[in-house]
Length: 283
Image (cartoon, rainbow, N blue to C red; front, side, top):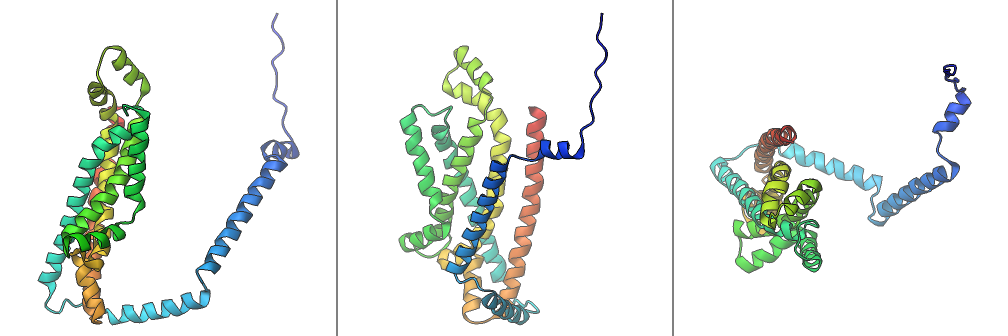
């Protein structure tokens, strides 16, 4: 004997609202969190003197500077500007590749599932914090004093900072490896190198390559800033023209920088999408 089919009882609007409304204590905590965040933001704005009047005055000065840059004019220095831009791109590429090469072995020591000893992992992780905790600009100012003016200081500065960041990202990528495959290979007698080769790298490499491409386009912008403190490249030319108030040449340099960054961003974006799609299809 089968029972009568059960029919759903429609809920009233009040019952539906009560079902989806969070408890009063949760709502109170959420409101307190938003209030605290707003108060903290207001305090920080007051502490750094972020006043609307100063912002309005600053935008007016910025508009006058932009007007002085028009129309952009290289004034016969286009070849020099192009060489400086090529130097900036070379700095970014060299630093990114060096940082990736250094980050790979360090990330193996810093990954929770691959580090040979917890104490070693802790020390390597603190090294990551040290390298990425110091801004590239500070590293550049230090190494300009150590190795002198020029792109070498910029390459070293970017390499140190990006090594810390890429090592952390690579280690976190390794930690997301499928543990069942790792355990299966270990149970079959595979050593650590074989586990990394067959269980970790196939899934991790597309993500790692995507990180490297992102940092390449970021380093092009960073290399420009480092040139201002003497690390060579187009940033050095930019700072020099600003000092002598050659604003049309400044405008030309800014246009060249924007074109280079946009081109690299477009190329690396397409490559990242292909790598991610390839990794998904392989999985």
